[in-house]
Length: 348
Ligand code: ATP
Image (tube, rainbow, N blue to C red; front, side):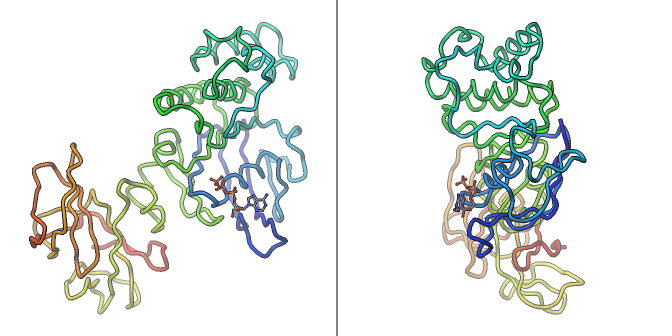
């Protein structure tokens, strides 16, 4: 396993007119499981392919531990990569597919057998080892690919690019926890690309959020939920995402229309957005809001309201059922201020 360091790494597919990946300096720590999370087109695959060596970055340098690998092709990097769709030797048996990366590296036969059996057992492939890979459905073929990516304990890193896309939803939960188990066993440096927040939050030690070719925040799942550093993180993570209420700082007071939302020092007067997650909007005493509707979700209610003409959602217990048109009071338990989308303060 290795630490992967990017120094000023960026990529443009059109000679520098636009940047699919804006130049960044970033370290993936050794033996940690990362999720690289972001919407379609934000540069996840570009970043992954740069790490694996499938793509040479337009600018910057890449290091595996202290060895520079910027110009080194994939084969010289000792990195395993699993793609979105199955890529395997269809004529070979499942066993031989799993054994391939180990035999290729001349591992002793006994060790090959031990590793193949361990990984296949963890991934539920032990009943299929003798089958030719082409006889499996696409979902199971993809699990074989996962196994092949994870079978070697001595790789510098394992890169997974939306690896569960073709796997059916019921299997996804199982596989994610299996992946965690295998990671604990091998201690790989693992980067898992996904646009699915649930996948990222349940799997990773650390989630790296990418937007428009830029890392906007990285942290443990709870940190991204509790302390979003960027409006995008607040919106993209959470269900529903964070509320954003346009407000104004005037004389150290944060004003929501005519109402005082809280006091803040050290910020210039002018517009800000208040960001507050639905979980932290409490009905009780506080700002006046007009209820616009209630969604009954079974385990909780989503109370929708308006403050100063702006929508606000509160996640409440099932006993809270205000009527549309009713005026309620709301308090924010944990709210942040954002300027130019970046967090600039906490509402006191
Ligand atoms: P997705 O989740 O849809 O796979 P992504 O986050 O992985 O998206 P990338 O595939 O890295 O994003 O693409 C980042 C940007 O670079 C996008 O605007 C995409 O259109 C562009 N891009 C990607 N590959 C190429 C290419 N080979 N030639 C030109 N532009 C490309």
